[in-house]
Length: 137
Image (cartoon, rainbow, N blue to C red; front, side):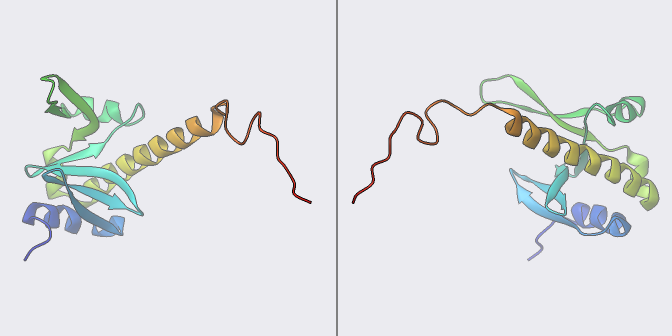
């Protein structure tokens, strides 16, 4: 039994020089990971790469679109993953370049999320605030 689709295997082969890319099934598609960080997803044999404010202009210039889905509330949700340009599938070096930029976006995304939590003030009532300790003698 094949664990990944032929399309996903092809993408992973193109990313051979990027190193350590694996695929995990998720929500009817696949997440692509490197060093435990998801930087791409594949849905219905379409590759989407992680974007942020740094690499989004590249996707816009290439005429690519974001990954969207219909939420059960009937609203369209846009994810921070955009379709990869078709020419990447004929050029492993270009695929690695775009994947590296997507990986950078994924790392920046993780860093900002961690950073946001570390700057939050402690919530009241935690760490025993207002409680006294009793020692038994």
